[in-house]
Image 1 (cartoon, one colour):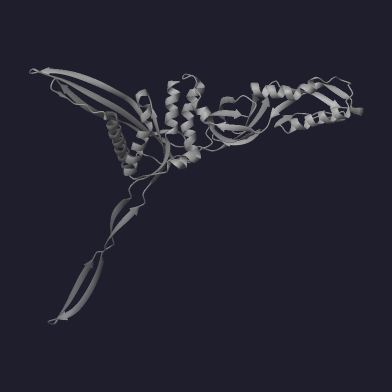
Image 2 (spheres, rainbow, N blue to C red; image 1 turned 30 degrees about the horizontal axis):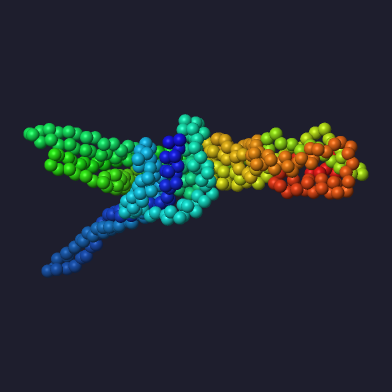
Length: 406
């Protein structure tokens, strides 16, 4: 629970940024082959020849355009529950410091709009911390979100630790207590398409307060001060790595793959009921399978389409979730590959099952060979049309006697 909640805080503290390094000027000097000019004239009865050698030197200043980094910033809290409430503040600090170093920050509204399809119920629902499903979901969501935003890089900043050390000093008759608070903040730059690490660093900041029998220092803003200093150091470290060209160009975008999703209703069938001659009920030996239509498909918390049908997703591990009114959510961790077909057996929710029983009670009470009145036949026919329009598909493949209800 703890890790997942902290991850959720980090996930929704996401903003898109566009970073631009400073333009560079390259100075080049080139020289042409020497040119020799000759002039002859007569002076005092003598022939005088003068030779002049000229060398042309060309100096060129070339302005290299600034490199643009399109990234997504994520702020998370590793293991400091006391700082959970400071995540938004740290996000603002990092954004401000990075902007001062030449980053162009997209507005929060732009990212919120891009995440409108994200289901908060999925994000906030607790899962076991040690489950494979949770680990895969946590690892893939940030990368998948950056891919959906079209980011070239991910800048992930995490609070590693916040600790306090106290030293008691007794020297030359003076007793002094020194309290030192230390904050460690790590960051890493990842390729926005593959998630591979490009560069990383850790910054550490500390603050001290002293107390003697006659003097006591107290700073109630210590944590905020440490966060401010850590954000400044992070921006400085990142600036140095950009200057050293340690942030390599992003890899080409991962190819999309097409997968087919075919939802089915688990253990849900309609009896083979047909209307024969003279409104006579004909009960077949088989049953018709029922499948839900217009099922919402979510990949890593983002709605990407509906099923049954084919959707395009990034290849690799992803968390698939199917939802539809009247059914329990269906969730699996999948490894998406081209041409994959997934059959999802969805179960009715208690409310959906109650509605189903009410709608089909009349059918289940029919008997083979019974003759219906005109009113009963119209009611039965209307029930069949109602089921057709309820968003459920009834598989009626096979020979018909005369007229099937479905």
